[in-house]
Amino acid sequence: MSMSGARGTRERLVVVGADAAGMSAASQARRTRGPDELEIVAFERGRFTSFSACGIPYWVGGDVGERDRLIARTPEEHRERGIDVRLRTEVTEIDVARGRVRARDLDSGAESWTSYDDLVIATGARPLRPDLPGAGAPGVHGVQTLDDGEALLGTLTRVRDHAGAARPGRAVVVGAGYIGVEMAEALIKRGYEVTVVNRGREPMSTLDADMGRLVREAMEGLGITMVDDTEVTEMLTGDDGRVRAVATAGAEYPADVVVLGMGVRPETALARAAGLPLGAHGGLLTDRAMRVRGHGNIWAGGDCVEVLDLVSGQTRHVPLGTHANKHGQVIGTNIGGGYATFPGVVGTAVSKVCDLEIARTGLREKDARRVGLRFETVTVESTSRAGYYPGASPMTVKMLAEHRTGRLLGVQIVGREGAAKRVDIAAVALTAGLTVEQMTALDLGYAPPFSPVWDPVLVAARKAAAKVRGH
Image 1 (cartoon, one colour):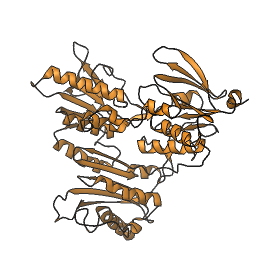
Image 2 (cartoon, rainbow, N blue to C red; image 1 turned 180 degrees about the vertical axis):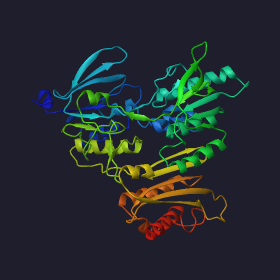
Image 3 (spheres, rainbow, N blue to C red; image 1 turned 180 degrees about the horizontal axis):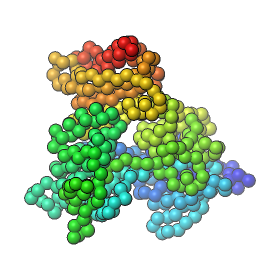
Image 4 (cartoon, rainbow, N blue to C red; image 1 turned 90 degrees about the vertical axis):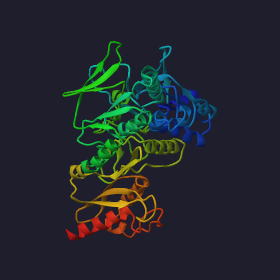
């Protein structure tokens, strides 16, 4: 007998994880199926729902004034819409055969089973923490949840109160990906002396090294000390047990606070234990409807899944809030009786460190080589506006095009104001499968305050098209 049969005509949707993907799915399902038809139970091990983790660096840096501005919808608001949100409750087991989950109340320790007709797994991603001496010491912080942000701000306040005006606080950021560079900016804004220790040759491994070098040079120009191609070996602690420095094989970097920005991995321990299919990157594998492969009533979305890369044709782990919300919309539509699919991604991402804007979409050189593509590359220097117009700022655009066919494969942009969002032109072109030759004819908006006559992306496309023709 089905679970709904045991309860009468009402079905039950259980959601594991009450942030972007999970609550988008729950909310979308509720729009089409009322509480009399569909009961929705959402388990969340934290204290918040539907919050923007991407906004935490800007809250820490002071651009966002208060925590609650990062919360799109509170638990109370979800409950008013007929969604039973259970906070501080962690799902510890998925029983696929019997259609139920085991959950533990983190405050009382009580455990109970909840059956489901449909299950949504939206467990997100876990930040990488080094398995090193001192990594768990007070003053060492990850930045993944609002609780993490509050803890970090508490440390920053403590350091300020202790140091007073005697000296600026000293911060070490471990890792130089998106979170690493954004947290470096936040700490610079807080008046800290900032050192970034990066195991890669250049910061921003999502870019090719030649473009990452531009990011490093700009960060150094902001007063950030960059230590590249270096592994952290230990977090050193003082007599009070708090972190006092970050050690590498050849040096120590004093630290009142350490922020970990080493990236994330899919949080799929529950799914693995339940025997659900995982991909090469550790994320859940779904079909285009976001249904877990081989399981008709189990769905998954957000940072715990792998998605199709439309350029390479392979699956990737791309943890971004934009995708998570789209996954949730697709899942909720399908559970609600409609039809929707998620076709895949092209890998678009933007970031900044102070006034430097960083963007990429599509494949890097090593991505293209890994999937067996031959390609041409071009790099151009241009400006954000007509050169004679006040405020024109430089930008560098790198473009990859497939050998012989000229199909656009990827674009990276580093520049000042007006640079990053130009990557959207390339994202649309990649999604449409345009060649660089076709891109040169795109009818983009032009006026001197907004771009040169030839937009920098089109300048790169012209140069790439000529290189493809030449070969």
